[in-house]
Image 1: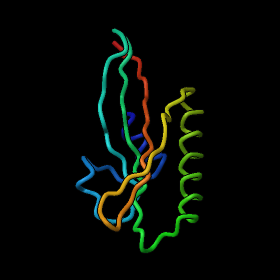
Image 2: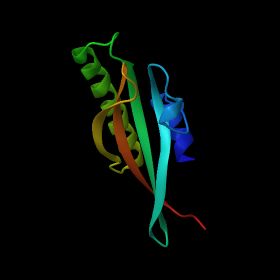
Image 3: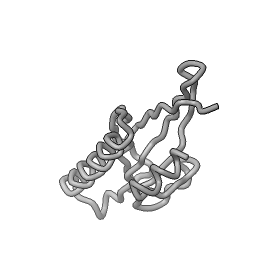
Image 4: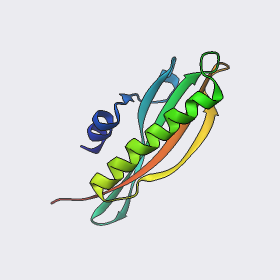
Amino acid sequence: MIFDELKEKLKLIPIANYAQIAQNGDYLIYDSSSRENANTQIRNFQIILARNTLEMETYSILKELKDMEDKIFRFESERRQTILNGVKSAFITNTLYAYIFSLEIKEKRVC
């Protein structure tokens, strides 16, 4: 299953929603799914790099962002599919902020 594959290869902590993020970590959320056509399912995931603003300087997170992008690019290469839609930043609490990677993965149905 694609969720388990992402979790294992990218070393992510699976969670159900943002409310479960209480500390630094690299998290995986299953966001949504839709059908492209009769044979293709589109699954949307989010990878959240949550960091405490008191402990993490701005420039040090840049290396972590680059490292995660590199992991995603290797994953894309293995699947022969572009999956990274973009990255944005957001605050989770007053001291915890996150960088959110949006992924869209197409899966062919096997009958």
